[in-house]
Image (cartoon, rainbow, N blue to C red):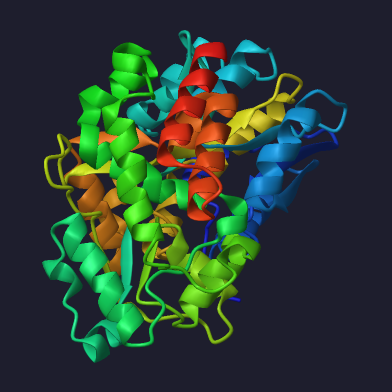
Length: 417
């Protein structure tokens, strides 16, 4: 396993000597227990523990969907971690409002803003209080396999409209290549399709109006069309056989093994697919990235992006040592190592220029050109409505709900949450 090297730099000195009692800091992360994430995280923990005698960091991983389902129960129990991964957004707001999180003091916030991303920290703030530190910015785009594209005679960079994309799906099907792999069992990978189609149709103002319950909320012509356009794709049977029985980890492993032409997923998939693939995954030379295309008559822009601003937040009973580790774990040294090691696109301003991987650079360019960045809808709208968006995305994919019924269900959920 490749470990990204971290040194006990001078910036670690602020933690040295601040914690000598025998303290364990429990950290819960989503499924990043594979190369290169695990190497980065393991080295970060080892460096921090070496500089802080008496402090033990217990890093645990949980599959994404299990994380979402089990975290609410954990936060209400004695088994709550001291800090955990957060996508920010509505779910994070709920956790803060319910008193499950520990706020940082003003002096700490002021200090951290000098080195960390102020915008990223704002994403982990609510009602004037800051609860965590940002790690990475994420964007979702269409990955493509250059080998398959060349064999099929497809130039993915020429895909500018949704009809172009559907045409490429048909060409792939005719050529015996699976157009898209997807982890349908987890539902959230399917919600990327529905979300981006909706964004392309209604744009920033339309999405904001839906969130505010204006123009019928989610039960309007734009959301109905989003479902109908989504169903145009579904009717082409674009996914691998049995896609609803495959979770994200399995799907990204298939992608890494070259099982499809396209994969609609975020930049984190570079490391995830290589860790899950049976042969080390696709090389940078075999990969390309394009933004999700425009839809005819849509109010959105090709530069409107879907993604996240993730990090880690503290729970209400977290010890002071957890604050020290959070600062280091999300700090300059670790994020610079992540950037140079091709692990993720950092939020720390001084680390951004260190991104060397050609694929991550393409994602960074997409993010840098963004005219409107929409947080993942299943996080942005909170647990109830966000969960409903995931549900209807899966139900439409299996033909168990119509676009009309999906729009009605979402609006009912929004009105009553």
